[in-house]
Length: 424
Image 1 (tube, helix red, strand yellow):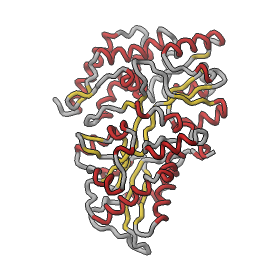
Image 2 (spheres, one colour):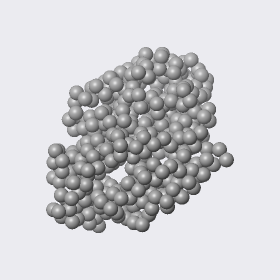
Image 3 (cartoon, rainbow, N blue to C red):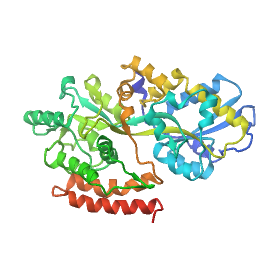
Image 4 (tube, helix red, strand yellow):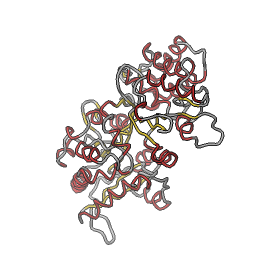
């Protein structure tokens, strides 16, 4: 299957060295040497298994015509490289678009949509919302990669797949009766912790953004953390005091010292290949349960942004042609081969026709519409870091933690967020 080709990859030294020479090119940039093509430098962070699938797209474009050339660089620290050296096109997560737009490093891409013959209506609405800053659109969405549920079919039948909190409790009771070392899930002490608490922010309809900063000091948010706390210490749906990435390592039992077995894992596409190797046909995939008031998941979105330095008409025309190629439904389907979930509606329709070929995207095409994203504020990642790093650990390790304790911590988190947003 195409999925078996998802393997770890490293960036070559030549690629790293080559990036330093790649400026954003505000001037007409016909390449030297044997090529007369207009070069468009494209910088992204796809240094894992997904990189080969993006290369298939860019190389396909390059061979499809003889006027333009996408010069792609894949870097782990690609945003740092973008700040230092620039690039015509850059892939950004939804959390970064706001900051880079405010800082004037990327440009409104509305004209690129129009010239490429695509519309914001051609994408999942949640992805367009995530790509919009102060009413202007700064990103062309590639995908949404949401929190997804994997389950072990040897322990959970398809009819027993938990859809609600009550289902989780019931399944856990059944598993514990079979074997005390079995748990319905494993709640990690670190790693995906932000995705866990943010998923319940969405499921409970909590609005964190306020006047440009994150307002964490809310009773409803404290209740979210207490819900996760009680899942561990009251309903015992997960062992306590688990470590990094334990939501998956306990599910797949990828280390010899793991003494518990989790029947499900709330995780993401990045672990699919390992899970498939462990379970084969016994691996199930589904939307995460509704633990709060409404169905929702948490995810990030990859977007293509255009440097503010791109003003040359030849480069603009080349970018438009690349976008026409990229958003041809069958071409973007190459991105689904990587396990990511494209949010371009015509490509999503193709995925729905072949669920066996695209197992994770086929589930996620029905969940991305209800996706919660990180707050749309300046330095969003830094604003939420205190919560993830200083509060979540207490949730999964301190049995006597109270709502009042959490409110005190969340008030401090809010003060920190105000400072990071420049409000104080």
